[in-house]
Length: 301
Image (tube, rainbow, N blue to C red; front, side, top):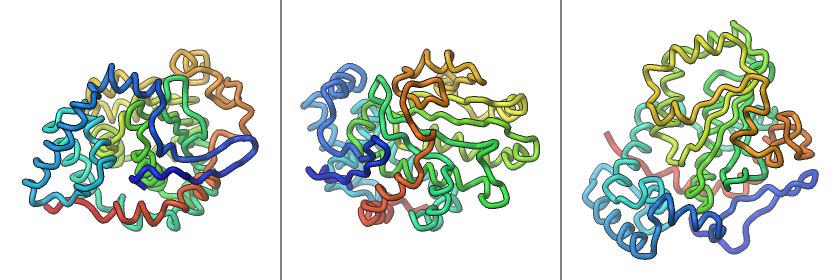
């Protein structure tokens, strides 16, 4: 998955193409990398060399030292400061040690039914700033009898492990849209303090991808209480990327252009729906062997 093959897999569905962007980043992304991430040929060369040296001294870390793209995912996240990249790698693996229940049986087969129930997925198109768009569905879309509260987060983690291999996403990042239409009080009780903490820690430390925006849509008033519970765990940087829009799609469009969004969110895309779980399942299935290889890396306590 991290070898940037020339021939990538494609899934066609209702006029959309689903694929992983494993090749060279676009000129737009390259410009972002230079301006925002300090990405220059010299910094890439020196960063890879120094990060490998630092990782060799970390006896409790088992990393793919021979894979440039895997290392680049953290160097880009750390703006090419090797010491900071090492810190990001530690956070990435320590999250897995802290919440092992989220990573047990983390494979596509486990989530086949969840994805086929259209419960959330990355969209086939990026936004106007080259960022990956992910739509998560809660509220009226969530059958709590069928899917426990951890399943949406675990499904998102599984998809992120593939998105992390895209140079374009490493540079431009990801934006999350969470649709909470008709979330009931009974459903909200599933969001315990411990679960909210694990979610926020993943977004802030465990994801290993630049999170450029978290947009909550169609939320009822009960979400205010959930946000108040979450505040002790949220850092200022995340607060600045967190937006509550309710049903005001014009507010959302100040961040994401309508031409990048499906019609249900005031966009102009002729999308059949806002989630494409079955198509994402078929796409990621073609990379499951590669993902399994990289899942074997980690750190010891």
